[in-house]
Image 1 (tube, rainbow over the protein chains, first blue to last red):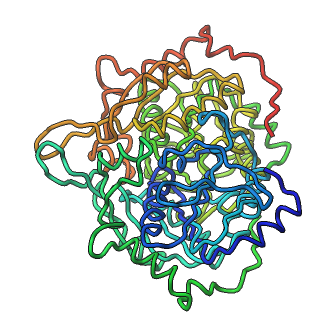
Image 2 (image 1 turned 90 degrees about the horizontal axis):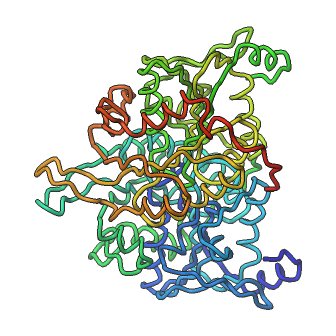
Image 3 (image 1 turned 135 degrees about the vertical axis):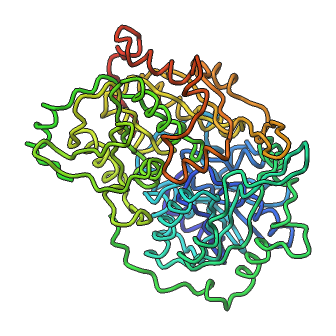
Length: 282
Length: 282
């Protein structure tokens, strides 16, 4: 990657990104990347132009979900994001490493710089939505994403545990301080169906999604099961073959519908975010 | 908290910490905090003096697992870590917040400083082992923990997915660069038992723990189930009531045995870490 001024100018000439959606949680391991990927695929299937910026620089999951390993090429106008089979453009730290297991041992300033470059030095081109898959926590990367990228919507991912809700509230607190609207909540790992007897049960106990929704003032869009079939497809790079009712092909797929509405309705409040705050966070 | 020089001197007079065990993963949501807590409780039950430093500053889970909310008091010799019912001393960012859901929006330098203060300004007293529950990733906090604390053993937590293994390899790469020995691997969420029919199944697919063990050169100590009973106890602050065979009270509880051996055998390689490297990571 390079930060050469002329490249930045070149990308600004070719990049037209209408919405930037952050997929956040605060908590790790709740399925932010899986939801980012499934949402991107279904939005692309509806004819929207979609990119994913994998902002989890030290624990990037997006390339693995799509089975992508090719290193992005550079061009006169910037770094070219590789496209998945369904046409989703992808940028991830792991695409720049020789070995996917290689650690990226970076402190905050380098992480911050990389996020800015993933925005300014990548030739995203014409996008209806850029989905930013955030890392856990409320430190450098989420803070930089909210301060430096024109995020105009957030999808918040949680799991049923109260512990998860507590940490998701922290991420929602960050979003609130940054005046970024939360479009909705997706509760992942809500239930599982026994492959032997077909009985569904709540593996991590009863849902706390509605309480969380009350606290942070955003609707619960869906409660997703843990599905061993989905896990297997995601783990082998076939996330584009996953079928899950909240995304498609149900008559009403709540997550995809909500996101499509946010993307295609320029007059929603989400397309006109509040005036940029002057962040005081240190 | 204060960094006053005299307090640092005072804690250095009362603190005698024989081993520092980092519980790491790279990946979030794999159960680092649960394993840290269960290990601490069983080691304390064996008569060892144990503390937990919750180093996940932006997503702290430890107080919730133990049902602890009291703010640590300051004394002449430093901050006094509250003790759980089984006598485990605890320090966590959430114990210093008025509201557990309040976000800690800090960049790397502040996170780094807090970790150092959790070590130098806390009156840990006499400890056989301080367990450091690390956050996900390989950025500021894990890097600072490995550079600034005398970590002499690492427990690596993973889940069955290949995706998790890939990210755990990154954390193992960081440990290797820092010349810190990995004692073993715990694979969490390996299987689940249907409460209806009693059938056990591998929710996230077949294990990749042995492959990971080969890659990083450390043994698999245990494969833990997802148990709704454990989840419920952990989520309501009763982690000390959890029974899990890998920790206790089985005739041979592999995780507790391995840790007890590391703690009580001063002559093991783990008690005499390699010479400190000169870290070049930026």
